[in-house]
Image (cartoon, rainbow, N blue to C red):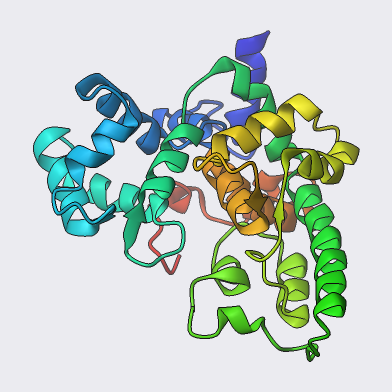
Length: 289
């Protein structure tokens, strides 16, 4: 029964052959897993080095406490036997604030969140199923908290202005999130219009649980997520850190908005592509489709 359910979930109902290709199976597995690329890197590092701290220090040859693209690609290609393409892609995933370097915290957090563990699979399933609701719940709380902070600071803000701390930082705060895939468009638009700085307010695991509890994420679920994301161990996470952590922990959430758009006008996702000729359904798409 499990095999039949898996086959039905993957198979294209509009495909007359009644078969599933290896590419389709591989894509389906990727959609319900942590980043397979980061998972592979984590395994290689732990095999080669004592722990992730040692691995970071070995890669950081100039002792700058951060990794640039050259350092990372050199280490991955020479010592982990990875291709330059794979190393470059992994670097971009771990570079959370898009400043072209990976800090120790970014390195640790990304690889910890990619750990393959059965204990985390139920949490990962809940996050995928509730991603839009998580974003909407966070939107309500961020707006409420931001309004309170601004009232206390007595600093007037226009409805279309971003927080002063974000000026000159094109990939931080709300702007970083607005340029990231996966967030529901209506939530992003609200953040942008109200100028909410998602890096300003830090929350404890208990405060995160208060936001997520109505979505049936238990206190243990929330604490497990926060513990994996909180690499520096200060017991607090901003919305920016949490949302990035969610995208690394369950990468397929970036497809949720696309899935929602497909289902809005169709009975199933496959029906959205019903008019695509059979010969073109397995064509590899480029950046521009």
